[in-house]
Amino acid sequence: MSSEQNTIAQVLVESAVKVVGKREFLKTVETMFGVSKSGGAVKSKEKKPRKPRTLKPVPEDNRCCARVKGDVSAVVGKRHLFESARCTRGCVASSDLCAIHRNQSEKFGALPDGRIGETLTNDQAERYCESTA
Figure 1 (tube, one colour):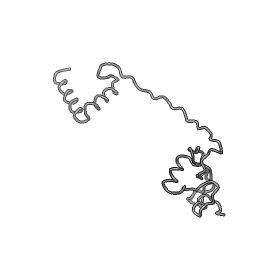
Figure 2 (cartoon, helix red, strand yellow):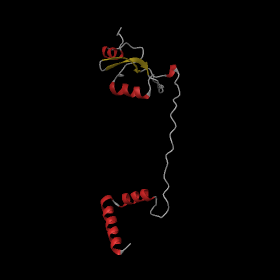
Figure 3 (cartoon, helix red, strand yellow):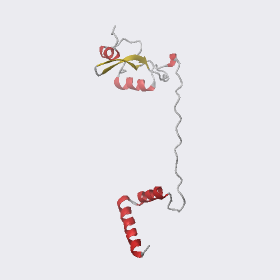
Figure 4 (cartoon, one colour):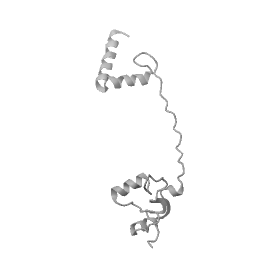
């Protein structure tokens, strides 16, 4: 390289460092050329694939008693009607609800979909396509 080309390259590098910052510029150079500022090759970090979570089934007598939406049983216009289902999470100590539903009950004073075994309100009956009796 001639001295004129060297100064042009220097000016370009300096202006790039001013625009993006020294750290970001060095990171970009390292990823583009695979060389770190110490002169060694950069090792690429490969993420290990995560194995899927396997949920252990909770015994029926230790399950949360909150009612949740189950499978879609019907579609009326744009509305989906759901089957009534029981929460699949386990109960927390000294409660018949899981941590999520216990917190909802404390925060809002009631569960949004009620408990399994309780009669449905009119709102819930419309959502679950069941009778209130």
